[in-house]
Length: 64
Image 1 (cartoon, rainbow, N blue to C red):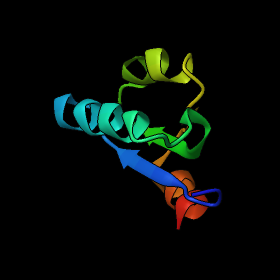
Image 2: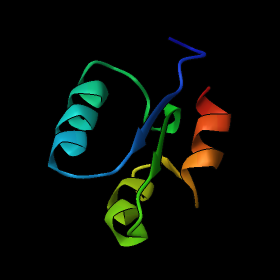
Image 3: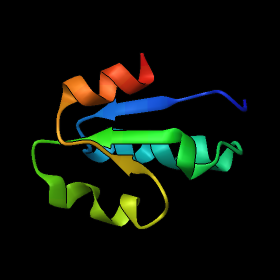
Image 4: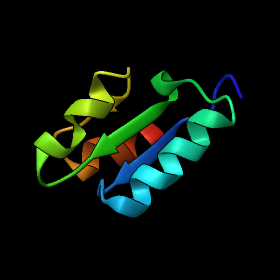
């Protein structure tokens, strides 16, 4: 899983639940990227080491 990059567009209840499961499975937070129209939704996840992008296009370019 070293090169795995996972991106989430929209950080609602479902994304938070999936992110929790992904982290429990052993994927490091640094391999998870996020984008949401409301950046404040991403702040607690950024503090855990996830990357937050300013647009969906930036995120998909990184994770694609």
